[in-house]
Length: 479
Ligand code: UDX
Ligand code: UDX
Ligand code: ADP
Image 1 (spheres, rainbow, N blue to C red):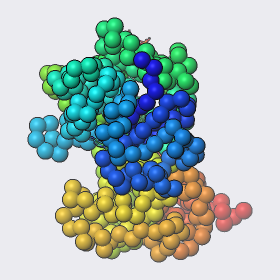
Image 2 (image 1 turned 45 degrees about the vertical axis):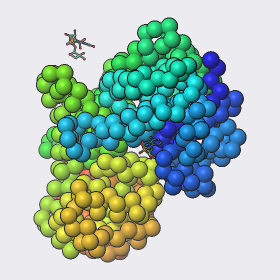
Image 3 (image 1 turned 180 degrees about the vertical axis):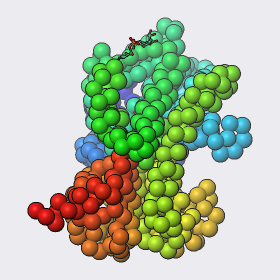
Image 4 (image 1 turned 180 degrees about the horizontal axis):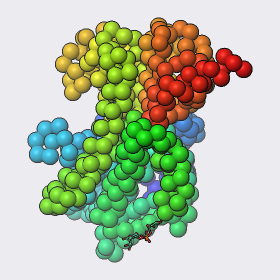
């Protein structure tokens, strides 16, 4: 079978960009991205796409209406497709068995049942969403228990490794594509057919094929390893603050060892995003189910350390402000979980804001890409507060950093947006309350310059002493 038509179930952060790039690179394949949300599909068909991702607008503009379509006609797209990606959401369960840890696979199951109902010809079904190991088995069981005469399924695992904010580059220049399938002639044939799609632009040597379970576990392992590096460097950031070492210098020295490597060693207020915590929790749950409590405890510590880092930073903010933020104006710069995305899922900024709000602060929030409603949604969520109206009264959302900082007692920088490095901090200092505090949760600003202006500065993994502040001020006033 040559793949002529692809359908993708789920037009989210994974399905949307992935299929847009497939359409760009495979002009001979018709790609239809479906979602059960009409609103989402309407956004994909409009000038303002539902997600912000550098370069995505251009790709969609080139392909939409040519061989890329966004549709709610799921039945038709499934029926005509040779290959179906399942890219639906897999949130962590909030009730029942495995609550708070296991992935809720109801949307995966729903998608598989929909395919089973509607398919009238052979399909390759590809699991793309991040899922716990053995999720492919669920899809397999549902499809094979509902097979109609003349319809055969092959189920593949093809996890996505894109990071938000760099999704298009990650897809176009993928370091590796991973495809897992069954070790049968039909399984191997399906793997080759999906390889053919990627070989339109990915060198064959970068396409790895494995069995289904290795593929599923590799995705969880990759994210767990990445998150573990961040927790490792963040744990050392606490040691640095207590000793006078500088975590950036430590990271530079450690990362120079090619066995360790320099990437992903930025100390921060903690990792966020929809994947890291969820995938580690999946790995923990899997380990517990397999009766491997030591393995579960090892990975649990990565999450615990991340929570500790968020708490530690927020505590530092409150303690510095004379142990009370009640009725103080605090400017929050950045709300997304990292720069170059409008995504707020598991953003550490949510925890910081929640704690400050619980202590009675008035927050002035600015983020270059997060939608206003999204900020309200996150901070008024029942899991965050049981006083949503009070929260609403205490948050003010601004459309520029300068507006957010005006009259503030303190600035708390939560996301490493480039534009925060370019702000005129002299101007900002003059419009703030004094003493003016600045907490750099991403270690991106020029701290000596800020100290010399007169700010009280605190950051992650580096002690900025009062003495150095006075020295810096002194060097400024005595040229
Ligand atoms: C991650 C993986 O990188 C990607 O391969 C996978 O497909 C999905 O999960 P994503 O969550 O989009 O991607 O972003 P990532 O760049 O990994 O950042 C995750 C979090 O870690 C962010 O909050 C980021 O600020 C933080 N981070 C990252 C650090 O705190 N320090 C670092 O050195 C790197
Ligand atoms: C280590 C550091 O590598 C070195 O930089 C430092 O100066 C001293 O400590 P060493 O202990 O001599 O060096 O050997 P190393 O090659 O690091 O191996 C340490 C142990 O880890 C060995 O028992 C080795 O078998 C084991 N190991 C290493 C693994 O089990 N798996 C690996 O992938 C690598
Ligand atoms: P991700 O980050 O994994 O891409 P998102 O939440 O951004 O997750 O996107 C998942 C999308 O999948 C949502 O827009 C949701 O409406 C959609 N979805 C869930 N179940 C189905 C289904 N059975 N058919 C089509 N779309 C679905």
